[in-house]
Length: 234
Image (cartoon, rainbow, N blue to C red; front, side):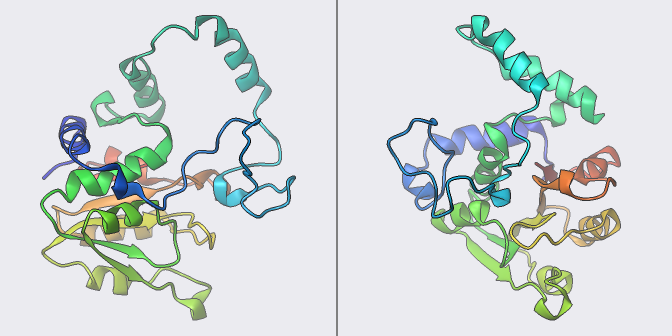
């Protein structure tokens, strides 16, 4: 099984039509509009910057505000993802067929166990990590093995334990780096070692939503550039 855009979208689309909304029960979705009648504080002080939700102290870039403002007069037009995919592919240095668009990375991550676990199987993940993907896998009926972090090693990932949990029924191997909520980071060399160790039919999911917080280095995208074809990087 190879991870191509056509295969991923086909699996996702066919399955999404049959999967009940109950699969995503208990999952936090995007926050509502700023004047929502609901309390969006989630228990934090009103002015708290929630790094675990990818918030920052700087606010949106002035260039982003300028670009959004300039585009408002055309907001009635329907934009197609295919118009953006080539630009993202060019920026990342990959073929456009390797780019899958979603409403943020969470949508793609939550579709992954549905698309690749349609025929059953299991998922391997760390325990103390972002659980959006694994909660969907739980609700979808997949077995999820959550391997605890190594507390006596500054909460490092237990790669030996995670790889030992992989068997012939494993469909997805999930790694969040930098990790949410511990901040644990994984080097590119370690990521590549995992990719080499995994069976060729296991989807290696790399959630790198916080990659900008770590020192510049190669990312999971470089695995794809080097020819690894069963990797999903968000």
